[in-house]
Length: 220
Image (cartoon, rainbow, N blue to C red; front, side):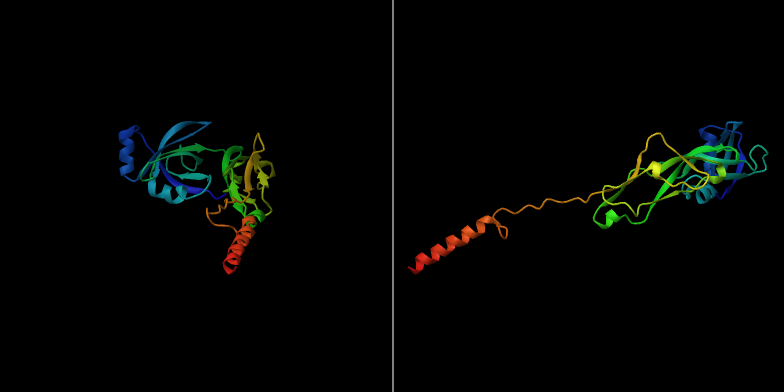
């Protein structure tokens, strides 16, 4: 996995006021923490974070570029990001330090590829789960996992046990959940309008017979 480099700096003040001032200066306040370190208050460039991190799919390793020894060259994952409800701007970010030699668990997006056989027959492809939990070393984190649906007929499904994970990646699950299925086509009931006799209906012959009798009486 490619590592994203992000400029970071330590910050000394916390609270809503200082955080608001940092955002006005184009910075995103955050916290950098991990199992083997004390939490550190940091700030990253808002534009750089948006271009390098927010636009990416899935989880990506981030290496901090900083003169501060406490965070310089450290590697992290974005654990959480608080967004503005209207503008979508990043208000705060939590960075979790990772050890490149220890496995970790995280969720990875699924990409459904190919055209299912059942879809060509009128079925509907229905993804049930959009991501899965995996365990792997930080360097083996996949951006996403492909799920080939080409062989699925109507009523067929792919379960998590059938997922083909990349080398070094183990899919974690307790139940064999359905990831994607092909549902049967939706059939709309066709209603015959009142007063309209369908072609070949049983009443059609009787109606024709009545018309014939009437014409015969006129001629008589």
